Each structure stands twice: as structure tokens, then as C-alpha cells.
Image 1: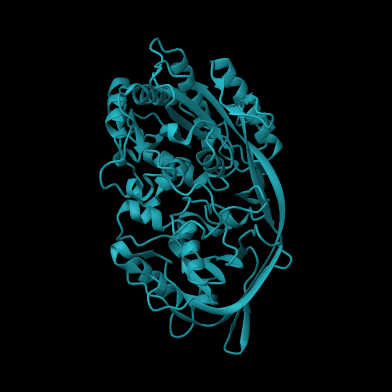
Image 2: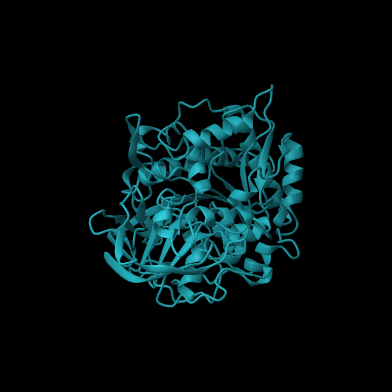
Length: 535
């Protein structure tokens, strides 16, 4: 963990020197552990590295604009302080002027009798909307419909030509606009197809912009309505769409360049001739967010907990399994994926282009940002309730002596916000292991974890100087290994529970690859829109 979080690696941003060094290091640790290379290089030779082609797009301040034209006058919002355009992966320069329509949270959920677009015409218009999904939805559907990618898909399908996401006071309280906006110079990334064009983007939406809660009244106070009233309607669940008076001009300028990064893939071959062709996938993202705006003179975002510690725990689990006196029957893949911070891109590429047969992936166990700063007695297996993995995980936790706790923040939808969601979309039952919240010795672990999220998450303070509980990390590695052993040795492959939302949505996997709306209305790739402004 200390090596991966060292300043030498410059925050391990995908496609940069620091991540390349991290990938080299992890490959050597896999080799030393006894894992065999499980990918192939460009010459078809066995390798620990799977190339992941991407496009990087970096916003430029010059040429960016958000101007509201209303009542015979213009209101121009200030770049960075009040608005930011998203990086554009399709055009170096883009500009659109069009009428506006407010579409609530941009959610279309016919199975729940809910439609933010009812009675609204989006053709040729700029959609203005809030993030998230209705609090009245169940956790799974709320997570799905809160996805930024799903919202963009719905807008593009209805003919919108641009989009403006407006932050609320509640969002700014959780994640201040200034913290998000400080790093607007960092590039966004998307997967790149063989033709050099970005995958999974929405060029119909010519410009997408974000507006701070403080600037929301400049956009929404019109026609007898106000931003503050709309915020209140959102909280009350009474939000409705309407034509927003006036027009808006959105403009952006981006620098677009090809980028290459690597997943690191090792395998522990299964011992059972009948089951060895099936694979359990362990995953942990290797990247962090690189070098950014300085905080107290430090500009390196080391990512010690997010996710150097997760990778270290995965490697420790691999070592335990490689040294097991009872070799697992199924094969075990260990994948340190790139570009999670750019939108789950490395995991998405692996799930679309696995280095083994696609139908050979039977389960995914993901490890991301275990916040282990207080002594705890538990772990949180997010998503355990969706599949037959539950019984295996519960048996493993009993063996290791770890209590299992429910997701403490289901409203944050973290089941679709890390790399397991790429595997879920491919139809693979998955769980996401994170650290616990039940403190030992009278320690308030929940308060300590909350302080980390407020003060150090995605900031330079997430470094190796934190009081990391390596005893808890070792216990979590033991649990990880025990879960993997039990999945590998089970007589049957894991299966989705009958009637499970994600199982019904993705149980047979999605169309492997496509552009924007060329996926027959299939759901989104989770929180791929996790750019600095909306993470």
C-alpha cells in the first residue's frame, strides 16, 4: 500500500507515468505470488497486461460559456465559480443556442408509474435537470435511475440538443461545489473504439454543463418559479417539469487526445478438471486521480485508501489462496483495473473483452476504498442480497469471525458506483466489499469514516500517513480469500435471485459494445459520468 500511495507514482492517474509504474509493480507482485499471466500482448504472447484504449478530453476555459437570454437581456454565468461544461469527446469546439425545458430529475420509470418527461417536448431544446432519483423509489431502482448515463440516454432519445445539470443546496452540503470545481483542468476519459471514436457518448447533446447551487437562481428564477422552491419540491417529492422561459447558449472547448492504459490480470488456475474453465473474478481499481489543485501546498492525490489499500488487500487474498492447502476448484482471476475514477472504464473494457471466455466468468468480488481508520469488528458486503452469493459470503464471514453489516448509506447507490457494476451489466453476480462501521473498544467508527469522506476523500490528504488499521486490512483479506475459495468450490455457479431487479435487467448480459443509443434502450454503465464535477 505504501509503495502504491507514494508520491513517486504521482497519484496513479490512468494513462500517465505513475499508473504505468503501479501496473508494473502489481504485475511483479502477482508473479512473486504465483499467479500466472492471464492476458495477451499485441503479439499474442501471454502477459499480465491488458491494453485499454481511451480518449482523454480536457476542458479549456477560453470559449466556454453559459448565457441565459431572457426578458430582453443576457445573464452570463462565471466559468468555474458558477458553471462548468463537461469535457467533450466528440468535438473540440461545440456551441448551441436553444429554448430550455426543466425536466425534474430526468427520470423515466414506467414500471413505477413515474415519468418526469410527461407532457414535455424536448426536441431541439436544452434540458435542465437535477441529479439523483426520487427518494420514494426502492434502493435498486433509485440507484439505476440516478445514473448520469441513464439520464443522458433519456434526454438524447427525446431529441434534446443540450443539458444543464443543476446542483442543489443538499448536494453542495455533501460535496461543496468549490472542491469539485477546483480540478476542472483534469481530463475526463472514455473508452475508444477501433475507429478511434469515443464509445458510449451522446453527440446529440452538443454541450452538457453543470451549474452550482449558488448560481441556480440565475437560471431557475423565472416565470413565477424559483430555485429554492424547486429544491423544496424535490425534497417533498412533488417536482414537475415545465417549459423554462427564455433560451440559453452553451459553449465548450476541449482538447481531445488518444490515451492508452492497462489492466493487470493474473490467474490462479483451478484444480478441478471439470470446473477449472470457470473463473471467479477479484477486482480492485489501481488508478487514482493524479495531480490536481493543491491543498495546503500538496498537489499529489495519493489515493492510499482509494484504492491502494484495496489493491493490497486483493493481492494479500491472492497470496492466501495461492498458498492454500486445498487449491480452489475453479480458476481465480485477479484484475487490477485502470480508469475507475474516469467512469469504471478499465472494468468496463475487461467485462466487454474478458481475457477468458465471456461465459466463463461466474462471479465478481470487488474491493474499493476500504476505509480502515478505526478498529472494527465487521465488514459490509454491498449487494449481497441480489444473488446466491449471500449464503457463501455469510458462511465465509462465520469462518473468519467477521460480522456482516448492511449498507449504511443505501441512498448513495454505491452498488452501481464501483467496478462491480461493469460485471453486473455483463450478467455476472457480484458483491462489493468495504470496511466496517462497528467500532471496537468504544471507538465511533462511523464518525471517523465520515470525517475521512468530508476531509480527505479525493483530496491529497488520502495518503499513507493516515492511521490505517492494517490488522483490519489483513482480516478483510482473509475474508476475501475465504469468499473466493467457497465460490470456487461450490457445486453450482452463483445465480441471481428470482425476481431480482439487476438479475432481470442484466442476467443475460448487455450488448457488448455500442455507441450512445445503439443499444436498444439498454441501461447505463453505472456512474461513468464520474467526472470531477459530479463524482
